[in-house]
Image 1 (cartoon, rainbow, N blue to C red):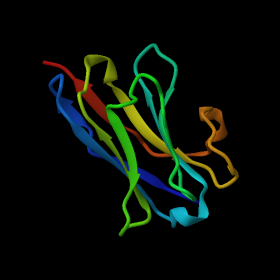
Image 2: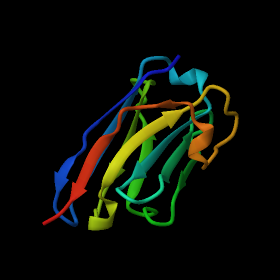
Image 3: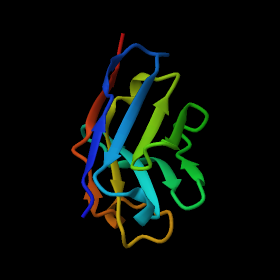
Length: 126
């Protein structure tokens, strides 16, 4: 059973950058996809970025495309990052990473993910 721990959130000014980390307690080699979702108060959980661990394919929501980059640590295979640049106030949310050993495709539906981290708060404000 995977345990996921996010870190790297915080307060940043508009236009700034943050790098989130997601550390898994098990080898991510056993999983097909790792995803980043976010949720702000009063809004539905939104899929932000997805990484197919087998071939490195990446997917981004339109709202973050060109600004966010998902990647895997080549040395620490159980760690995935979300580099967030040119942050906007509307990026403010709790960001969570998720995975599921049953998935053998990249699902954009949060209901398909059974393992979640505790989340890390990202606040973009001047």
